[in-house]
Every structure is written in structure tokens, then in C-alpha cells.
Amino acid sequence: MLPNRIRSRLAAGVLMLLIAAPACAQDLEWIQPFASADISSFGSGIQPKEGYFFVVDALHWSISKPNVTTIGKPNYVREAYRSDATAEATPFLQANTMDTGSLTSAFASGNRFEFGRVFGHRGWLFSGYFMHHQDQRITASSASILFEDHAISTGVNALDGFVENLDPTDPTGATTITELRPLPILFDDVAAKNLVDTWSVELMCLHRFHQLHRGGVIELFAGARYMQFDDSFGVTALGDEVVDDGTQPQPGEPAVTVTPPAILADSVWDTLAENHIIGPQVGLRYCYQQSRWSLSTEGRFFAGFNSQNIHQRGTLGSRLAPPGAVDQPYLLSPIDIDHSEYINEWSPLAELRVEAKYQLTRAVTFRVGWTGFWMDGIARASNMISYEIAQPNTRPNPVDFESMGILAGQNRQAVFGHGLAIGLEVNR
Image 1: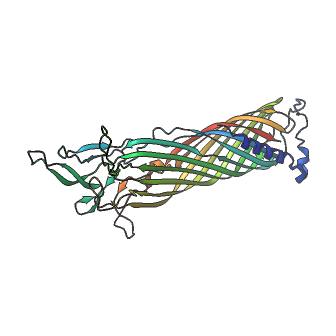
Image 2 (image 1 turned 45 degrees about the horizontal axis):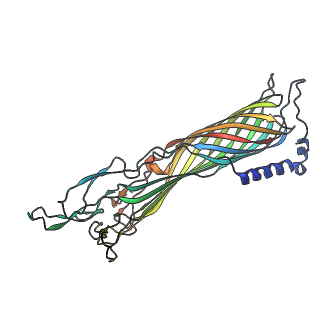
Image 3 (image 1 turned 60 degrees about the vertical axis):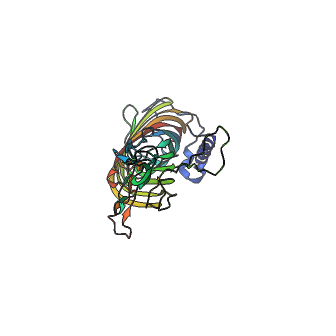
């Protein structure tokens, strides 16, 4: 939703402070913020304003969602076994049951501030925006999240455990046998969170061309920009456990059944993709005023160099305690996750603004408009997770295997953002 009352008061306070700023600089005395609007059409028409200018906007923007991916190893199916004292050991196929398809291009609020100065044909401009979190959640019960497991000992994979089934060689059906088999991966409760934070600052020189014959004004920008786009994806996967506490059931009530927890209960992992983008920027602005109304169109191109920092932290199977009991991994211990990757990418950005304005006084103008931007080469966290357990280690560290990890090759996505901007400008 649009900024709340606190942000509105803050913006109003900032605006009043800026309006009061003429006392700090000699040329600001020409602003006269409460003088009547100058809408004269004599001579060459309404002249473009000179001197210091200030702009504050409330933003309501949407950021495009990451590419849809499974929560678990993509396109992976595995055979698993369950204990059942009344049936022979029979494998069943298990697939992932969760993905990120329910994420949307959600809207978030923010603010944009601009400050600059122009006299004659020369000037400068500082601009920055700050968006609040785009926070989205996915929840599920009885969810399968599959990890590809590898051997951690001779003949034993990470997710192998003992299951108890009917002995097929006993014709009486009174005997069970215990065998080492792949176990199912099933969590009782899963909560996933996708979080996006973005902000940007830019400083540019400005050249204002001669006013056009019909009154329009064209300005050319050139300078530098820094933009940060952080995307994180975290999962909390829990397993319930029902234990027989020795209490005798009441007449007519069923006996308490001991149910082991999910084999990887409880697991938490979080992946953060930081995109630090810096580089040169050029822009062009056209503004035309007729009476109190004006229309402004503005475009920018940003040649961004993206330094990506990808971090993954968490724990798998925090309740594991080998050697595992029946229906629990036999040799697997809790796994701490700590991975980082540092990647450089090219991330160009194109931005377009279209604004309609109404002049309230000589210096103060109300404005409403649309802003859209497209950029490429952005790392999104949910698409960079490797769902592996006990993968053979390829790094020069003392452990023989590592679990989970970062898919460094999945670091390029296009992002589109757009939305509404409403605000006030002084002497622009």
C-alpha cells in the first residue's frame, strides 16, 4: 500500500525543510515558494526554472518475481521405503511437492528524493530511491523436499536407514525383518520466505538545451549510479514427533502410536544473493508546460558492473543422532551449511519515467507519474540452491563431502519493476 501516515509526515517535514532552505544560499531567494504561479504566455512562453530544485515522491512499485523453481532438487524422483510390520518391503516413488510458483510480482512502498541546481545551460542532479521489503511467504504441510544423497560409508548413503517389514520367507506372517533402505523425505510443516530489498543513488551533470520553439525543454544527463538489489530465500522445515508417554488410553480411545519425526527434522537454510551494481549512466528529459499543466518524459540507460555476493547458511537434520533408530538415517549427523560465492556480471538497466504535473504556486508543483525499469544479469536466491547431501567434496578443505551449495551458473535473471510515483517538486 501507499506510504502510511508516518512516512507522509516525514516527507512533508523534508519538503518544508527544503522550502526553508533559501536562507542557506543566496540564489535560493528567487524560489518564492508561495508566490502565484507564473503561467504567462507572452513572449517565448513560460520559461524553465533556474536555481536549486527539490523533489520528493512516494512510490508504490512492483518487482518481478524470480523464475519458478522447485523447492528441492529439480526434476528428481527417488525410491523410498517405509516400515510396515504387516507388509513386505515395497518401494514407492517420491517427488517434490513444493515450488515457488505462488510468488507474485508484489507491490511495495518506498520514497524517492532528488536535489539539484541549474543555471543557464549547466547544472547537476542527485537522485535516490529506497524501497521497503517485498516480503512473500509459502507454507505447506506434509511436504516432500528431495535432496540427492551420496555414499558416506561403504554401501551406506546419507539418507539410508533401517526399515522393519514382514519377512516374505515366513508363511505364517508372524516374523519381521530389518533392512537398510533409502528413507522417504517428508516434512510435517514447511515455511519458505522470499525477501527483496533494493535502493539506488545517482549523481549526474546536467546540460539544458535552448528552449524549443513551442516551449518544450530538453535536458541531457551524464554521470554515475550505484544500485543494490538483494534477494533472499529461506526455508524452515520441521518434523513432528508423537511419543508414547506411558499413559493408558481411556476406554474406547485408540492406543497411542509412536511416530518418528521426519528424517531431516528440523532443517533451516537461507540463501542470500546480493547484487552490488555500479557504473556510468546517461539520460534524457523532455518537459513541456501549458498553463498550469506540464508533461515530463525521462529516460535513463545504466551500464552496470554487478559484483554478486552469494551466501548460504543453515543446518540440516538438527535432531539427528547416529546410529539412527528404525526409520531414521543410520549414519547421518546434523549438517551445518556455510557456502559463499563471488561472481562478476554485466547488468545493464533501462529506466523510463512519465509524469503529469500541476503547478500549485510559482515554485511548488504537484506531480503523479509512472516509472518502469528493466535490468538483466541479476542473481535471485531461490534459483541458486543446490539440493545435495554428502556430495563428494571438490574444494581444498578437510571434510570429505559437503551438503547443499550454490549453483553459480544460475546467476542471471532479468528483473522488471514498475509502479506509481506521487509527490511534490520545488522549483523544478
